[in-house]
Figure 1 (cartoon, rainbow, N blue to C red):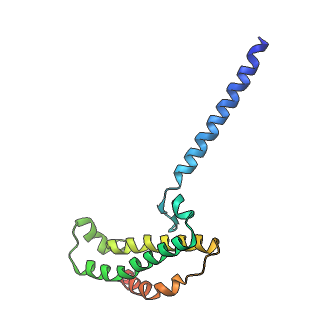
Figure 2: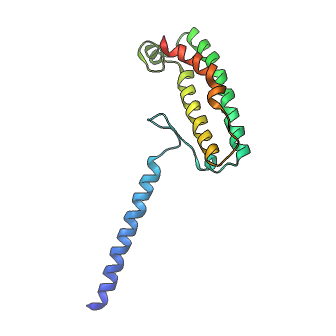
Length: 145
């Protein structure tokens, strides 16, 4: 019966290894790419490995989107809400039922995450706060109403 002991030990090690792999898989799946509940943005693997030039291009592209969103929010607010849920959201919702405000929050968090990666890699600095000051002020007006 002593020849069964190594098999039992191997089975235990295999079970432990399988449990560890499953735990790592669950942990990896729990952080989804995109806007998180705490307002941060989880980048995908490709974005984390971009070089400085690609990071700068991505940040500048997002800044241009963000600068256009106050006008979209203004047009969206002037138009009738396309659904009852959005109409209700305009009265009581956090984003006032405006899709543009939710998009602004997502794009702003994405730009900040890209900027953190860029800064961490020692890339030339970009002053995204200065670039977005006017857009932030315009979006803030929609949140007050």
